[in-house]
Amino acid sequence: MTSPKPGSPRPVPPTPASTPGPSAVTTASASPVPAASAPTPAAAPSAPKISVPLEQLASVSAVPEDEVISGVQEVKRSEPQAKVDADVLAAHKAWTTDGSPALSLTKGKHRHQYIVSPEHADAIRDMLRKAGLFHKLRVTRSIAKPHIQDGKATGNVRIIYTVSDTKPRAPKATDAK
Image 1 (cartoon, rainbow, N blue to C red):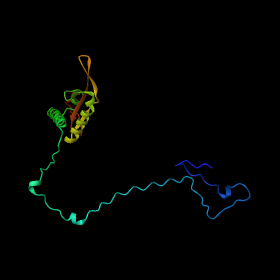
Image 2: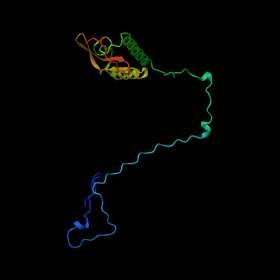
Image 3: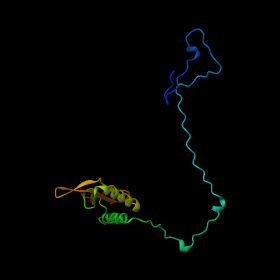
Image 4: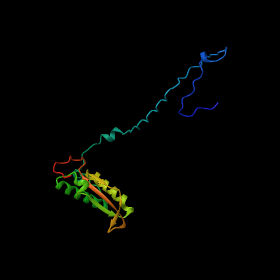
């Protein structure tokens, strides 16, 4: 007899009433197996308990004033990332100065680009994403497209991006189509 495949229901043994022949034998230990018993879900692993001695929690004190940092923790940004951050902030400032026109993000002057070598395209896209997260802005980036100048491919790629608020603003009546 072959064993059933894992995950398939177990075969149901014949009951004494359906056993062919005149000698139906029953035993006290035989119990019917439900035909479609669903497997019980595995218990979720419990979170590890963290034990901290109460003596350590009782030693709460104020931080001396010479160690207090201003309200915002300073984050060290790499030089290229700081440049991309500044470009993103400048693009957002230009967009808000113009009254945040929604259609200008897709067709207008508020589209910006980097022209970089193909091996740096993913790094630039990632830096644009990080700048948006860091400044809580929406940065929409395109995929890297070949850069063509004077009808010839330059070997570089263009990454076009736009910067707007995190929540999209509703188009204004003054936005041109």
